[in-house]
Amino acid sequence: MNILTFFLQAAPAGQAQGGSLSFILMMVLIFAVMWLFMIRPQRKQQKELEKFRNELKKGDDVITAGGILGKVAEITETDVLIKVDGEVKLRVNKNFINKA
Image 1: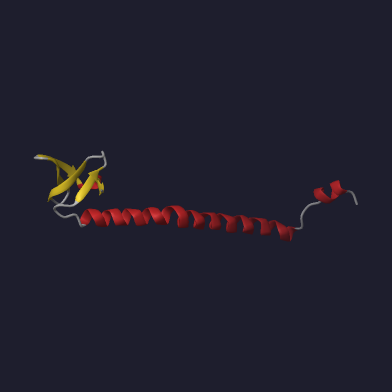
Image 2: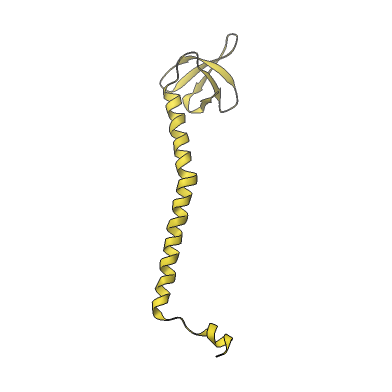
């Protein structure tokens, strides 16, 4: 038997479905790894940031998305008044507040 004819022989019908099953299993495994290492930590970080924003109180040190550091002077439902320096105060939307 020649090596070339050995590789050119058609695979039996039972083995063709094994290839598709292993492909599906590999795709499920890839999705599970992506969820474990990428999606899950990002959701956890978003929940922690949302908890921080909801628990803000007067006097907390914060940083805005633009990089401005300040202390919380007043909190409303959607906005935060930040004391930056001396009597300088900025009103910022809560969604743009991060941990200092």
